[in-house]
Length: 461
Image (cartoon, rainbow, N blue to C red; front, top):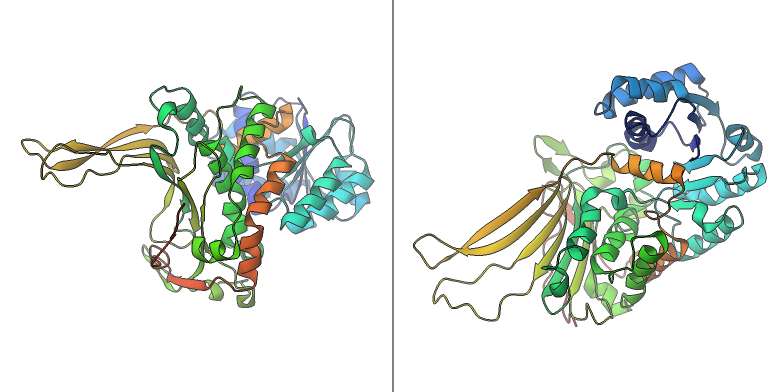
């Protein structure tokens, strides 16, 4: 296990909300000892004392689930260095020390190439690892080039392209539910499943993240990585094992089976939109273009939806719809597996049987099976829902990812060929959207999103 972690971009939102609390969780669970060293680097001209004060404030805000002594131990282990990630000398001063180091690039993706080059010139100690946040690259070409730079720096097994969705307990239960239950696996195919929706709709707006989000948008921020990874777990063939190679090989199979989107497909099967002024709960929300830090000329979308087909025996004829939006009226974060209706219902005029839907709730984490029942003393259909709440995980998602990095287990990270394949899927969408071939629709903040388009998703075959 590596006992040194260096975070570049350490004063940002990612460190405050996720990395520092994740480390506190690891300390509380006994995974980090007194010898753990945390070096935090950023452009701010701070010293150790100021950084530790800032870190204490952030942990008091975002890490209260973990004991005070664990939080204090992480703060005490931290030292701060002012460093420019583009300067190899600065980088060398941050990673200096005995033994290998795990380097976490909590930076905008545009900085990844120059950061990797600086690390190469600074000289990483043997056995070191590098962690990159999503999105990995900005398009296919940049992802291929970034993979080339990384291959010259460290072996592939030392590269962690992290996606914290993969460490969520419900996400892992997608696999568990499929593969460990005989009642599901025989019907986990297009004969029985009509549609799978993978949705991350949220009431949150930018929350001060315009400097990042306005250059990325919903498609790159959510669909290209998080939602495509969920698609892989839902649709993959059963792997021989859940080991790193077997699992990631089967995920790659899914991405390679996605039917390429033609120009007409992009127009019919994708949507983009951004929010107008509105009201969410008890707060008024300005239009996206009026949010601080937004450049209206970028025409960044805050809502993205894409409909995919898989060319393989298991899923031919099933529609996969991936959707994410901000500033919506309600949070909806789930994988919804919609089964086909039964061929015949022998209940006279009881009405139409409701479709069976298996829902994997992502936030909060739960599972629900929607069934159809018969009302008491009647022959009319009534909905039934069986819900299972998940036991709280031992570690938060980022705690699990950090532990995997320090232990050198890349199973829940994204392999280089996976990252490139995901960009290939979206390349025609990015091209069409950048050329305004797909209209940029609008929706009021606090609504359900853009109005339904008719006809939508025609010719699903």
